[in-house]
Every structure is written in structure tokens, then in C-alpha cells.
Length: 348
Ligand code: SAH
Image (cartoon, rainbow, N blue to C red):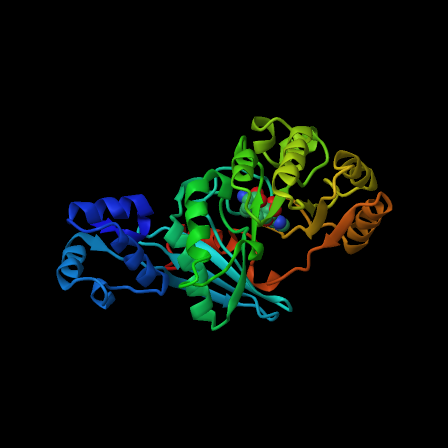
């Protein structure tokens, strides 16, 4: 069976051609899927014969909520089961400026960052454009919250699934769907080889966040293996500067603070030197403890001192507020726990 939500627009048009139908029918089908249709019989503007031909050949997969946890601060986290029994996580955070959904872009991750739970089982597969769209649609529906912003900061590396991510952006921006435009989207990346350059070509008005986490190659390569393959921190910053030039959009660096690892004042000085001359923003993230990672969050005084050192060097810096800490809302933790309990013989 062919799953329409795993298909690209071109594949869907191909299928319609085989069925002797014009290409515009693909847009009609998409419009139904954008509204969450689960059955071809609902698609009342398609000829009845096409509806039954589609039902014979295709399925419409959907995300099934496996787990849901809610934090005292209003953060809601979902673990979804996909059509092939794989799982991904989505988090909804309530902010003053609107509700934000943090979505996964891949099932698992191949980046191997030392501090991250998402990468433990490696990469299983990419998510399709519609699966990502459904994370947003379904989280809104299941939580009863109106979603105004989307961040690609969940499981996976979005720039290694760029085609589907671009398809997802066009679904998200459709006026007949959720109508969430580029200025309401942030994409977070560890900066794999060629990724930032490819994204820059599209000149999107989204916010690019780059996971830096260390001011030099020795440390960054230890925490993030991608650093060795992509040419090091100097090159990464140069790519971000070029991205800023090409798109006119200010880049944001994420820097998580791990006790005694990357949080000294000397590290802050080195970070300020590394990004000097750019108008980039630095977002400091207190580390979330992950089982087995052997890293501890920096104490609050250290975070403050790191921040002040950057400020003295004229760096634009904020500390990210922790959301949903009591429900394992950090990247990949719910999925990891669910898998661990499954392999322990327990039913999820
Ligand atoms: N692959 C992308 C997006 C997913 S990770 C990237 O690397 O940016 C989203 C953000 O969460 C990244 O900045 C990542 O470094 C951070 N992160 C992962 N594990 C974390 C942890 N235990 N504590 C704090 N931040 C973490």
C-alpha cells in the first residue's frame, strides 16, 4: 500500500497521472490532508471513482499519541507512534508571545552529540513533510492550544532532511492550512557539511539557530563529532556570517553550559573572540541532565558569570528559560525512556 503522507508532491502527481487524473487533484488531496482528513471518502470535491481508486491503492497514515505528559509550567509533551511503529516526540510550550511547538525532523539522529538523548539509537529514517506537519496539527488539537510558532529543535538534524523540511514549510504556510509563515519558524542545526550553504540558497525569513556549545575545536569535537567532519568552529562561524549576508537575518548561537566542561570565564572570552564582528545572538542553555551522559548542568552563579563576561565583550546574550524540566522535555528523553522500558519487557 502506498501512504500518501510519505509521498512528495511530485510522487502524488505521478500517481494521479497513472489513474488518468489531472495534476491539480494533488492540491485538492493535500487540502484535505492539511485539515487532518483520515479517509478518502471525506474528500467530497474528488470524483467518487477517484476516491474509491485511491482508497484501493493508498493509505492515509496518522500519528497516534502513545504518551502524553504535562508539566506544571503548562508544557505538554507527546510521544507519537508513526505508521511503521517508529516513535518521535513533540513538545508544546506556552509563552507570553504565543504557543510554540518543538518538532522532530528525523526518527533518531546520527550526529552522536555527547549530551543528547536523541542520538542514542542512531538514525532510523527521515520524517516526511506531512509527518512533520501532523506533529504541529496534532499537538495543537490534542493540547487544545492554538499554535503560533514552530521550532525545529526536537529529534533529528533538519539540514540532513532538507527537501522534506522545505516541503513541510510550504504546507505550514498554506493559507488553507495552519498559515504559519517563515517569521514564526526557527530551525536549529549542528551545522553538517554544506547544510547552512544549501539553506542560504533559499533565502528564507526563518530564524537560524546554530548549536555551537564550545568556543574551540578541541572541545567542540569532543562534544559534537560533526565538528570534525565539517571543518571546525572558525569555518562554522564564517558560514553563519555568510548566511547572515545572504539572507539579511541575524543568526543565533546556542551554547549549553555543562559544569566544568565549557563554562569557564576563559571559555566565554574565547566565544566572544570567535564571533566578534558579527551581530549574532547567543542563547545560553542550562544543560538538561540525560541518563548516562556524565554531564552536569552549570550552577546558576557560573551561568551568570559566563553571561556577564559575554556582555562585557558586547555580545548580545540571553539565558533560555527551562521549560518542562519535570517531564523530561529535553530532546529525545521521552523516546529514550520508552525504548528502554520496552527493551526491559514492559509495555509502553
Ligand atoms: N540537530 C539540531 C536540532 C536538534 S537539537 C541541532 O543540533 O541543533 C536541539 C537543541 O537542543 C540543540 O541546541 C542541542 O544541542 C540541544 N540539546 C540536546 N541535548 C541537550 C541537553 N541534554 N541539554 C540541553 N540542550 C540540549
